[in-house]
Length: 204
Image (cartoon, rainbow, N blue to C red; front, side):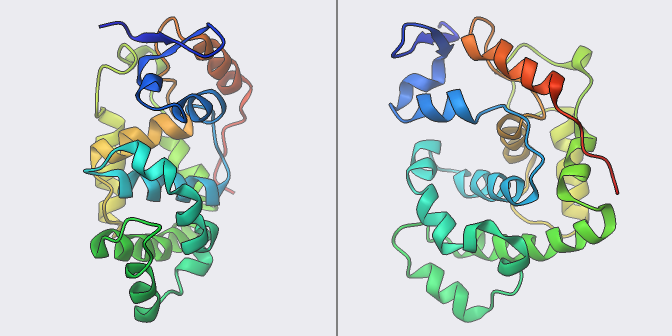
């Protein structure tokens, strides 16, 4: 099976784009580009957690609804959610109404607030898990890595929930911690250049 597929403009892209038309825009403009904004990182992690057991197409289609429901994933706001907020979210047909995952977002918002106090930013902490380029496998041949396993263990130790190694590997792909665009994908070099020019956040 080929690792690339022809896009609307005739250029080759990662083969998973062909699963849904809306994937092309997400792939071209977001997936794999390095992120250092804490709220965007928190959003990406939460959405990957919601995706567990579901298709990414389902989550992407509901992303605006998730943002509206969870205060644009401002973890300082979400950290103050209470039981009435949980009930409100469970009645929201525009999102995935899974109590465990909803409660995990609120819990993780509180843990995120603590992590910022300890490390200065979420970005500084997450980018600490960037793997050595020489240790990377062929793009899209794995669902976990040593780094995603290590990050999962570290976050669970800090009380985070729904942060298994597979979820965190998808998070690493999405936030640009690794460049997992297929060889031959026209965006692999573009993402690599963005990563090369990206200033890694450090603890303040």
